[in-house]
Length: 579
Image (cartoon, rainbow, N blue to C red; front, top):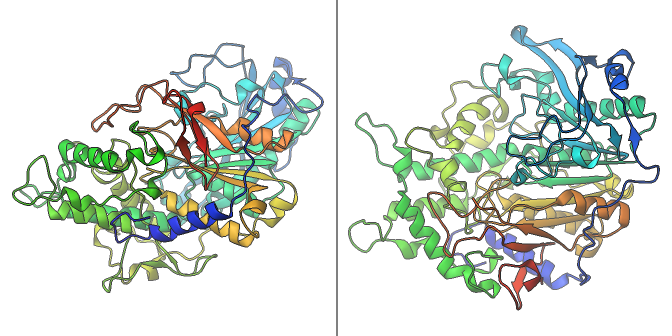
């Protein structure tokens, strides 16, 4: 890709080109009708059985709270949901409760929801951030869907966990990092213990083990899904890993680097403090979005405000640089430099890439930067992480100030200043092989048992860069003998203009659960997933022109293919082909 940036992305684009030349895909559309329950049909659970669950013995000896019965239609998965949940039992418990350092209580808390009419399947709902609370186990499939179309409503037994710690008991959300066991629990132990315990309770409640088990999560949940394929390959038949923060230390380094660059473009107040929200004005952001869309929009065959393949586009933000005084029609040289440096990723004083030392595979990995896409300067893109608002700091400042001191450097340092990082020496402080690292490439045991895996990632993600996921998948391809054998068990779908897990001027509402179930149970590998837009996707401080209609649909194509317009209504997915 020729972006005009001094960027790491040429190797990513090069990998995509090699895969494109080597690819041999089938041409048919997916059978995307929901797969019926596995053999054996629905099992049932009564209210009386629900209240008796806590009186039995299960694997890992959980300590239960009171189980409660939810009548049909009595609750919704979210206040925005238009449909109510079916009758089900809510089970809450704690595995391995203990008292940690400084008297802080720890334990792996979980919530398991058991439907009155069970379809024989188990669904693990991945977490987010650094966890620290138990989310309602309704089985969120896509965060863009507002609590509708959840797995519980489809008859799945669903579990969630807090990752082994509660934020309410901690000084900061990352302070559990000072407790060695809590680090292991959050890294991988809590999800393993939760899955095993949940299956034991399901067996005891319905008199049968799950016929099929599925994991679905985004962000930290995506990391957890990858962890299951690497450490616990027998746990799930299908895993969906969205926007995985597989290497959180490296990702946080990229975020802090971007924060430093945007700070250079921000004015100072009377006390010398950084006025983050003024680094790029609304007009500056709109200028960037307009210029990018103008340069790249038609590369997919139609000018529709969306760029299906940003890797095929040549765009240099230097075209925005003022030739005279700064005004709303141009950028300062400092602004141009800030964006170009953020995209390229962190470098040392000698100009070389910052490399993360001692990680599992590969060794000495460069910290990735970002990919410019239509959503890059829209509200849920980089502005949410690097600019903030007049009343709130940029999101990445909190990540650097809160997470790094306890999770990403050794020894922990509560006085750590993310803006003061010396990039020549910082890698020497980074924690080597932390328990939450999920970049192992050897998932041969998962592959051998017939496990299937779907990755998805928004190209405009301002958190974990899509570059990380592309590079991981390309390495899987190399390790497994090429694209065709890799696609027999793992596929990657990129979502143009989507920011972190959802949002952006994108078609961000899609159903990876049906795709993974059809693959596991019908043998139908997903060539594409149809995604639709939402009314709010094109609105906000920075808009995309032409605007994204709420009824727009697009195919999300199995990498390395991308959607190209052929003929017909430009708002319909069927007018595009994956090639």
